[in-house]
Image 1 (tube, rainbow, N blue to C red):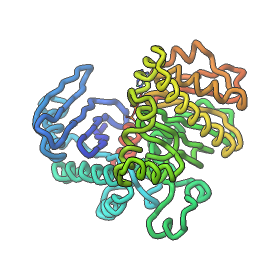
Image 2: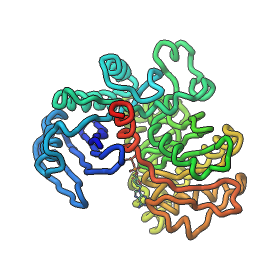
Image 3: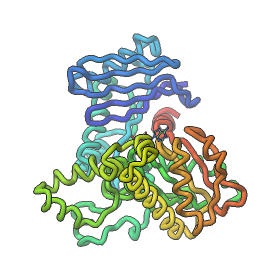
Amino acid sequence: MAKVMAINAGSSSLKFKLYEMPEEKVICSGIAERIGHDDAIFTLKYQGDKKTEILPIKDHAQAVKLTLDALVKEKIIINFDEIKATGHRVVQGGSYFSHSEVFNKDTEDKIESLIPLAPLHNAANLVGFRAFKTILPDVPAVAVFDTAFHQTMEPQDYIYPVPYEYVEKYGVRRYGAHGTSHLYLSNESFKYLKDVKHPKVISCHIGSGASISAIKDGKCVATTMGLTPLGGIMMGTRTGDIDPSVMKYCCECEHKTVEEMYQIFNKKSGLLGVSGISNDSRDIMAAIENGNKRAELAYQLFVRRIADFIGQYYVRLGGADLIIFSAGIGENSPETRQMVIDEIKEALHVEINDELNKQLKGKEGLISTSKSAIKVAVIPTDEEIMIARDAYNMLLK
Ligand code: ADP
Protein backbone atom coordinates (compact mmCIF):
# COMPACT_ATOMS: atom_id res chain seq x y z
CA MET A 1 0.00 0.00 0.00
CA ALA A 2 1.26 3.48 -0.82
CA LYS A 3 -0.11 6.99 -0.71
CA VAL A 4 -0.05 8.71 -4.08
CA MET A 5 -1.17 12.24 -4.85
CA ALA A 6 -2.82 13.35 -8.12
CA ILE A 7 -2.32 17.06 -8.76
CA ASN A 8 -3.94 19.52 -11.13
CA ALA A 9 -2.28 22.93 -10.92
CA GLY A 10 -3.88 25.94 -12.59
CA SER A 11 -2.59 29.48 -12.80
CA SER A 12 -4.20 30.45 -9.49
CA SER A 13 -5.34 27.10 -8.12
CA LEU A 14 -4.00 23.77 -6.95
CA LYS A 15 -6.35 20.78 -6.86
CA PHE A 16 -5.32 17.46 -5.34
CA LYS A 17 -6.61 14.01 -4.50
CA LEU A 18 -4.76 11.64 -2.21
CA TYR A 19 -5.13 7.92 -2.96
CA GLU A 20 -4.25 4.68 -1.29
CA MET A 21 -2.78 2.63 -4.14
CA PRO A 22 -3.11 0.10 -5.64
CA GLU A 23 -6.52 -0.12 -3.92
CA GLU A 24 -7.52 3.13 -5.65
CA LYS A 25 -9.17 4.35 -2.48
CA VAL A 26 -9.65 8.12 -2.26
CA ILE A 27 -8.33 9.22 1.15
CA CYS A 28 -9.06 12.91 0.81
CA SER A 29 -9.20 15.73 -1.72
CA GLY A 30 -8.91 19.48 -1.70
CA ILE A 31 -8.22 22.68 -3.52
CA ALA A 32 -6.36 25.94 -2.94
CA GLU A 33 -8.00 28.72 -4.95
CA ARG A 34 -7.15 32.37 -5.53
CA ILE A 35 -3.45 31.67 -4.99
CA GLY A 36 -1.59 35.00 -4.95
CA HIS A 37 -4.37 36.76 -3.04
CA ASP A 38 -4.78 37.71 0.62
CA ASP A 39 -8.19 36.08 0.63
CA ALA A 40 -7.26 32.76 -0.95
CA ILE A 41 -9.54 29.79 -0.20
CA PHE A 42 -8.32 26.41 1.01
CA THR A 43 -10.77 23.51 1.09
CA LEU A 44 -10.15 19.99 2.38
CA LYS A 45 -12.63 17.12 2.02
CA TYR A 46 -12.04 14.13 4.27
CA GLN A 47 -14.37 11.38 5.48
CA GLY A 48 -17.50 13.19 4.38
CA ASP A 49 -16.40 16.39 6.09
CA LYS A 50 -15.55 19.64 4.25
CA LYS A 51 -13.39 22.31 5.86
CA THR A 52 -12.88 25.70 4.23
CA GLU A 53 -10.45 28.38 5.31
CA ILE A 54 -9.85 31.88 3.90
CA LEU A 55 -6.26 33.00 4.28
CA PRO A 56 -3.39 34.60 2.33
CA ILE A 57 -1.57 32.16 0.02
CA LYS A 58 1.25 33.94 -1.76
CA ASP A 59 2.29 31.28 -4.27
CA HIS A 60 1.99 27.63 -5.29
CA ALA A 61 4.87 26.57 -3.00
CA GLN A 62 2.95 27.95 -0.05
CA ALA A 63 -0.20 26.18 -1.27
CA VAL A 64 1.68 22.86 -1.35
CA LYS A 65 3.10 23.42 2.15
CA LEU A 66 -0.35 24.38 3.42
CA THR A 67 -1.88 21.26 1.87
CA LEU A 68 0.70 18.91 3.36
CA ASP A 69 0.53 20.62 6.76
CA ALA A 70 -3.27 20.25 6.70
CA LEU A 71 -2.91 16.51 6.02
CA VAL A 72 -0.65 16.18 9.07
CA LYS A 73 -2.88 18.38 11.22
CA GLU A 74 -5.95 16.31 10.34
CA LYS A 75 -3.90 13.15 11.07
CA ILE A 76 -4.47 11.92 7.50
CA ILE A 77 -0.70 11.38 7.32
CA ILE A 78 1.82 11.32 10.18
CA ASN A 79 4.57 12.99 8.16
CA PHE A 80 5.34 14.06 4.60
CA ASP A 81 7.39 10.88 3.97
CA GLU A 82 4.17 8.91 3.70
CA ILE A 83 3.57 10.35 0.22
CA LYS A 84 5.45 8.01 -2.08
CA ALA A 85 4.70 9.49 -5.51
CA THR A 86 2.93 12.36 -7.22
CA GLY A 87 1.25 12.63 -10.63
CA HIS A 88 0.80 16.00 -12.31
CA ARG A 89 -1.70 16.89 -15.00
CA VAL A 90 -0.01 18.66 -17.90
CA VAL A 91 -2.26 20.15 -20.54
CA GLN A 92 0.04 20.27 -23.57
CA GLY A 93 2.46 17.45 -24.38
CA GLY A 94 2.91 18.49 -28.02
CA SER A 95 4.21 15.77 -30.33
CA TYR A 96 6.73 14.68 -27.68
CA PHE A 97 4.50 12.63 -25.43
CA SER A 98 2.17 9.81 -26.45
CA HIS A 99 1.85 8.61 -22.85
CA SER A 100 2.73 9.72 -19.36
CA GLU A 101 6.39 10.36 -18.56
CA VAL A 102 8.52 10.31 -15.43
CA PHE A 103 9.56 13.83 -14.46
CA ASN A 104 13.27 14.47 -15.06
CA LYS A 105 15.22 17.36 -16.56
CA ASP A 106 14.36 16.33 -20.12
CA THR A 107 10.62 16.04 -19.38
CA GLU A 108 10.66 19.40 -17.64
CA ASP A 109 12.53 21.05 -20.53
CA LYS A 110 10.10 19.67 -23.10
CA ILE A 111 7.06 20.83 -21.12
CA GLU A 112 8.70 24.22 -20.78
CA SER A 113 9.38 24.41 -24.51
CA LEU A 114 5.65 23.83 -25.14
CA ILE A 115 4.56 26.84 -23.07
CA PRO A 116 3.94 28.98 -26.20
CA LEU A 117 1.30 26.44 -27.28
CA ALA A 118 -0.52 26.55 -23.92
CA PRO A 119 0.73 29.66 -22.13
CA LEU A 120 -1.55 29.63 -19.11
CA HIS A 121 -1.78 25.90 -18.62
CA ASN A 122 1.70 24.45 -19.11
CA ALA A 123 3.37 27.23 -17.16
CA ALA A 124 0.96 26.64 -14.25
CA ASN A 125 1.39 22.86 -14.44
CA LEU A 126 5.17 23.31 -14.16
CA VAL A 127 4.83 25.76 -11.27
CA GLY A 128 2.76 23.12 -9.46
CA PHE A 129 5.31 20.39 -10.12
CA ARG A 130 8.22 22.58 -9.02
CA ALA A 131 6.41 23.59 -5.83
CA PHE A 132 6.07 19.91 -4.89
CA LYS A 133 9.68 19.25 -5.84
CA THR A 134 10.86 22.02 -3.52
CA ILE A 135 8.95 20.62 -0.56
CA LEU A 136 9.20 16.89 -1.37
CA PRO A 137 12.56 16.74 -3.23
CA ASP A 138 12.90 12.95 -2.98
CA VAL A 139 9.38 12.01 -4.01
CA PRO A 140 9.26 10.84 -7.66
CA ALA A 141 6.70 12.34 -10.02
CA VAL A 142 5.06 11.66 -13.38
CA ALA A 143 3.56 14.04 -15.91
CA VAL A 144 0.20 12.96 -17.35
CA PHE A 145 -0.68 14.79 -20.57
CA ASP A 146 -4.13 15.86 -21.78
CA THR A 147 -2.88 15.46 -25.34
CA ALA A 148 -1.15 12.06 -25.08
CA PHE A 149 -4.15 9.85 -25.95
CA HIS A 150 -4.69 11.78 -29.19
CA GLN A 151 -1.21 11.15 -30.53
CA THR A 152 -2.48 8.10 -32.44
CA MET A 153 -4.40 10.33 -34.90
CA GLU A 154 -3.35 10.18 -38.56
CA PRO A 155 -2.05 13.33 -40.30
CA GLN A 156 -5.35 13.62 -42.22
CA ASP A 157 -7.00 14.11 -38.83
CA TYR A 158 -4.48 16.43 -37.22
CA ILE A 159 -2.95 18.61 -39.94
CA TYR A 160 -4.60 21.97 -40.65
CA PRO A 161 -4.57 23.16 -44.25
CA VAL A 162 -2.31 26.15 -43.53
CA PRO A 163 1.12 26.60 -45.19
CA TYR A 164 2.95 23.41 -44.29
CA GLU A 165 5.98 25.25 -42.96
CA TYR A 166 3.81 26.41 -40.04
CA VAL A 167 3.38 22.77 -39.08
CA GLU A 168 7.12 22.20 -39.27
CA LYS A 169 8.35 25.47 -37.80
CA TYR A 170 5.73 26.16 -35.15
CA GLY A 171 4.05 22.85 -34.45
CA VAL A 172 0.69 24.14 -35.71
CA ARG A 173 -1.66 21.11 -35.72
CA ARG A 174 -4.52 19.53 -33.81
CA TYR A 175 -3.34 18.16 -30.46
CA GLY A 176 -6.73 17.76 -28.79
CA ALA A 177 -7.32 17.81 -25.03
CA HIS A 178 -9.28 15.93 -22.35
CA GLY A 179 -7.22 12.91 -23.50
CA THR A 180 -6.92 11.48 -19.99
CA SER A 181 -10.71 11.50 -19.72
CA HIS A 182 -11.25 9.95 -23.16
CA LEU A 183 -8.71 7.22 -22.36
CA TYR A 184 -10.50 6.49 -19.08
CA LEU A 185 -13.83 6.29 -20.91
CA SER A 186 -12.33 4.10 -23.62
CA ASN A 187 -11.00 1.68 -20.97
CA GLU A 188 -14.37 1.60 -19.22
CA SER A 189 -16.22 1.05 -22.50
CA PHE A 190 -14.83 -2.43 -23.05
CA LYS A 191 -17.16 -4.00 -20.51
CA TYR A 192 -20.11 -2.98 -22.70
CA LEU A 193 -18.47 -4.35 -25.83
CA LYS A 194 -17.32 -7.83 -24.88
CA ASP A 195 -18.87 -9.37 -27.97
CA VAL A 196 -17.36 -6.81 -30.36
CA LYS A 197 -14.09 -7.61 -32.13
CA HIS A 198 -12.93 -4.11 -33.06
CA PRO A 199 -14.91 -1.70 -30.86
CA LYS A 200 -15.84 1.69 -32.29
CA VAL A 201 -16.63 4.22 -29.62
CA ILE A 202 -17.69 7.88 -29.71
CA SER A 203 -16.97 9.44 -26.32
CA CYS A 204 -18.63 12.75 -25.50
CA HIS A 205 -16.97 14.62 -22.63
CA ILE A 206 -19.56 17.36 -22.19
CA GLY A 207 -18.73 19.63 -19.29
CA SER A 208 -18.01 23.30 -19.09
CA GLY A 209 -15.18 22.47 -21.46
CA ALA A 210 -16.36 19.86 -23.96
CA SER A 211 -14.85 17.54 -26.53
CA ILE A 212 -15.73 14.41 -28.47
CA SER A 213 -13.37 11.63 -29.53
CA ALA A 214 -13.67 8.84 -32.07
CA ILE A 215 -11.96 5.72 -30.73
CA LYS A 216 -11.25 2.46 -32.55
CA ASP A 217 -9.75 -0.55 -30.77
CA GLY A 218 -8.99 1.67 -27.77
CA LYS A 219 -7.02 4.17 -29.86
CA CYS A 220 -8.03 7.73 -30.66
CA VAL A 221 -8.56 8.32 -34.38
CA ALA A 222 -10.10 11.80 -34.18
CA THR A 223 -10.96 14.42 -31.59
CA THR A 224 -12.71 17.76 -31.67
CA MET A 225 -10.39 20.08 -29.74
CA GLY A 226 -7.61 21.51 -31.82
CA LEU A 227 -4.33 23.35 -31.40
CA THR A 228 -5.88 24.47 -28.11
CA PRO A 229 -9.10 23.62 -26.25
CA LEU A 230 -10.86 26.45 -28.11
CA GLY A 231 -11.60 24.20 -31.09
CA GLY A 232 -14.36 21.67 -31.73
CA ILE A 233 -17.87 21.79 -30.31
CA MET A 234 -19.40 24.89 -28.73
CA MET A 235 -18.81 25.01 -24.96
CA GLY A 236 -19.84 26.91 -21.83
CA THR A 237 -17.81 29.98 -22.76
CA ARG A 238 -15.84 28.91 -25.88
CA THR A 239 -16.90 29.22 -29.50
CA GLY A 240 -15.60 25.87 -30.70
CA ASP A 241 -14.93 25.71 -34.48
CA ILE A 242 -15.89 28.83 -36.41
CA ASP A 243 -14.87 30.39 -39.72
CA PRO A 244 -11.46 32.00 -38.95
CA SER A 245 -12.56 35.17 -40.73
CA VAL A 246 -14.99 35.80 -37.86
CA MET A 247 -11.89 36.72 -35.83
CA LYS A 248 -10.74 39.40 -38.31
CA TYR A 249 -14.21 40.84 -38.88
CA CYS A 250 -15.08 41.06 -35.16
CA CYS A 251 -11.72 42.71 -34.38
CA GLU A 252 -12.43 45.35 -37.03
CA CYS A 253 -16.02 45.95 -35.92
CA GLU A 254 -15.20 46.13 -32.21
CA HIS A 255 -11.79 47.83 -32.56
CA LYS A 256 -10.18 45.07 -30.56
CA THR A 257 -6.84 43.32 -30.85
CA VAL A 258 -6.51 39.65 -31.78
CA GLU A 259 -5.55 38.92 -28.18
CA GLU A 260 -8.65 40.68 -26.85
CA MET A 261 -10.93 38.84 -29.27
CA TYR A 262 -9.18 35.55 -28.47
CA GLN A 263 -10.11 36.08 -24.82
CA ILE A 264 -13.70 36.81 -25.85
CA PHE A 265 -13.84 33.63 -27.95
CA ASN A 266 -12.50 31.68 -24.96
CA LYS A 267 -14.31 33.28 -22.05
CA LYS A 268 -17.38 35.17 -23.25
CA SER A 269 -18.74 33.03 -26.08
CA GLY A 270 -20.42 29.61 -26.27
CA LEU A 271 -23.54 29.11 -24.14
CA LEU A 272 -22.77 32.29 -22.21
CA GLY A 273 -22.24 34.42 -25.30
CA VAL A 274 -25.31 33.28 -27.21
CA SER A 275 -27.72 33.17 -24.26
CA GLY A 276 -26.38 36.30 -22.57
CA ILE A 277 -27.32 34.53 -19.33
CA SER A 278 -24.81 31.98 -18.13
CA ASN A 279 -22.28 29.34 -19.09
CA ASP A 280 -24.00 26.81 -16.81
CA SER A 281 -26.41 24.45 -18.52
CA ARG A 282 -28.68 24.46 -15.45
CA ASP A 283 -29.21 28.22 -15.71
CA ILE A 284 -29.88 27.93 -19.44
CA MET A 285 -32.43 25.16 -18.88
CA ALA A 286 -34.19 27.26 -16.22
CA ALA A 287 -34.30 30.25 -18.59
CA ILE A 288 -35.74 28.06 -21.37
CA GLU A 289 -38.48 26.96 -18.95
CA ASN A 290 -39.25 30.65 -18.45
CA GLY A 291 -39.62 31.15 -22.19
CA ASN A 292 -36.27 32.84 -22.89
CA LYS A 293 -35.70 32.52 -26.64
CA ARG A 294 -31.98 33.32 -26.65
CA ALA A 295 -31.39 30.60 -24.05
CA GLU A 296 -33.31 28.18 -26.26
CA LEU A 297 -31.27 29.15 -29.31
CA ALA A 298 -28.01 28.78 -27.36
CA TYR A 299 -28.91 25.27 -26.31
CA GLN A 300 -30.11 24.28 -29.78
CA LEU A 301 -26.77 25.40 -31.20
CA PHE A 302 -24.90 23.48 -28.52
CA VAL A 303 -26.82 20.26 -29.12
CA ARG A 304 -26.61 20.57 -32.91
CA ARG A 305 -22.84 20.80 -32.78
CA ILE A 306 -22.56 17.71 -30.60
CA ALA A 307 -24.88 15.81 -32.95
CA ASP A 308 -22.95 16.97 -36.03
CA PHE A 309 -19.67 15.62 -34.66
CA ILE A 310 -21.26 12.33 -33.64
CA GLY A 311 -22.42 12.01 -37.27
CA GLN A 312 -18.98 12.91 -38.58
CA TYR A 313 -17.28 10.40 -36.29
CA TYR A 314 -19.78 7.69 -37.16
CA VAL A 315 -18.59 8.03 -40.74
CA ARG A 316 -14.95 8.37 -39.73
CA LEU A 317 -15.14 5.13 -37.72
CA GLY A 318 -17.20 3.30 -40.31
CA GLY A 319 -20.00 2.86 -37.76
CA ALA A 320 -20.24 2.90 -33.98
CA ASP A 321 -20.86 0.36 -31.25
CA LEU A 322 -21.14 2.71 -28.30
CA ILE A 323 -21.79 6.40 -27.64
CA ILE A 324 -20.67 7.59 -24.20
CA PHE A 325 -21.95 10.66 -22.36
CA SER A 326 -19.67 11.97 -19.63
CA ALA A 327 -18.53 15.01 -17.57
CA GLY A 328 -20.72 17.62 -15.81
CA ILE A 329 -23.44 17.90 -18.45
CA GLY A 330 -23.11 14.44 -20.03
CA GLU A 331 -23.36 12.73 -16.64
CA ASN A 332 -26.03 14.90 -15.03
CA SER A 333 -28.36 16.20 -17.71
CA PRO A 334 -30.86 13.65 -19.11
CA GLU A 335 -32.46 16.53 -21.06
CA THR A 336 -29.25 17.22 -22.96
CA ARG A 337 -28.73 13.53 -23.71
CA GLN A 338 -32.30 13.27 -24.98
CA MET A 339 -31.89 16.34 -27.20
CA VAL A 340 -28.68 14.98 -28.74
CA ILE A 341 -30.22 11.56 -29.36
CA ASP A 342 -33.28 13.22 -30.93
CA GLU A 343 -30.97 14.86 -33.48
CA ILE A 344 -29.18 11.65 -34.49
CA LYS A 345 -31.80 8.94 -34.04
CA GLU A 346 -33.28 9.03 -37.52
CA ALA A 347 -29.98 8.60 -39.31
CA LEU A 348 -28.24 6.32 -36.85
CA HIS A 349 -31.20 4.29 -35.55
CA VAL A 350 -30.35 5.03 -31.94
CA GLU A 351 -33.00 4.62 -29.29
CA ILE A 352 -32.81 5.32 -25.59
CA ASN A 353 -35.07 4.28 -22.74
CA ASP A 354 -36.72 7.36 -21.26
CA GLU A 355 -36.87 6.08 -17.73
CA LEU A 356 -33.30 4.81 -17.68
CA ASN A 357 -32.12 8.12 -19.10
CA LYS A 358 -33.98 10.14 -16.46
CA GLN A 359 -32.73 7.96 -13.63
CA LEU A 360 -29.06 8.27 -14.46
CA LYS A 361 -27.55 11.36 -12.88
CA GLY A 362 -23.89 11.11 -11.99
CA LYS A 363 -24.11 7.33 -12.16
CA GLU A 364 -22.97 4.78 -14.69
CA GLY A 365 -25.19 2.64 -16.87
CA LEU A 366 -26.63 1.89 -20.29
CA ILE A 367 -29.54 4.06 -21.41
CA SER A 368 -30.14 2.54 -24.85
CA THR A 369 -32.90 0.03 -25.56
CA SER A 370 -32.19 -3.47 -26.86
CA LYS A 371 -33.45 -2.36 -30.29
CA SER A 372 -30.96 0.51 -30.60
CA ALA A 373 -28.39 0.09 -33.39
CA ILE A 374 -25.75 1.70 -31.17
CA LYS A 375 -25.44 1.26 -27.42
CA VAL A 376 -25.56 4.48 -25.41
CA ALA A 377 -23.96 4.68 -21.94
CA VAL A 378 -23.47 7.28 -19.25
CA ILE A 379 -20.02 6.86 -17.70
CA PRO A 380 -18.78 9.32 -15.06
CA THR A 381 -15.21 10.22 -15.95
CA ASP A 382 -12.29 10.10 -13.54
CA GLU A 383 -9.14 11.85 -14.70
CA GLU A 384 -7.55 11.83 -11.25
CA ILE A 385 -7.56 8.06 -10.93
CA MET A 386 -5.74 7.84 -14.27
CA ILE A 387 -3.06 10.18 -12.90
CA ALA A 388 -2.75 8.18 -9.67
CA ARG A 389 -2.58 4.90 -11.62
CA ASP A 390 0.22 6.15 -13.85
CA ALA A 391 2.13 7.50 -10.84
CA TYR A 392 1.78 4.19 -9.03
CA ASN A 393 2.45 1.93 -12.03
CA MET A 394 5.41 3.89 -13.38
CA LEU A 395 7.09 4.78 -10.11
CA LEU A 396 6.22 2.30 -7.39
CA LYS A 397 5.07 -1.01 -8.84
P1 ADP B 1 -15.14 21.44 -16.20
O1 ADP B 1 -14.40 20.28 -15.57
O2 ADP B 1 -14.87 21.60 -17.66
O3 ADP B 1 -15.09 22.71 -15.43
P2 ADP B 1 -17.51 19.90 -15.53
O4 ADP B 1 -17.30 18.61 -16.23
O5 ADP B 1 -17.38 19.92 -14.05
O6 ADP B 1 -16.69 21.06 -16.19
O7 ADP B 1 -18.98 20.42 -15.92
C1 ADP B 1 -19.51 21.57 -15.36
C2 ADP B 1 -20.84 21.86 -16.02
O8 ADP B 1 -21.71 20.73 -15.87
C3 ADP B 1 -21.59 22.99 -15.36
O9 ADP B 1 -21.23 24.22 -15.91
C4 ADP B 1 -23.02 22.66 -15.67
O10 ADP B 1 -23.34 23.23 -16.93
C5 ADP B 1 -23.05 21.17 -15.83
N1 ADP B 1 -23.75 20.48 -14.72
C6 ADP B 1 -23.25 20.14 -13.53
N2 ADP B 1 -24.19 19.53 -12.77
C7 ADP B 1 -25.33 19.50 -13.52
C8 ADP B 1 -26.65 19.01 -13.31
N3 ADP B 1 -27.01 18.41 -12.17
N4 ADP B 1 -27.54 19.14 -14.32
C9 ADP B 1 -27.19 19.74 -15.47
N5 ADP B 1 -25.95 20.22 -15.72
C10 ADP B 1 -25.03 20.10 -14.77
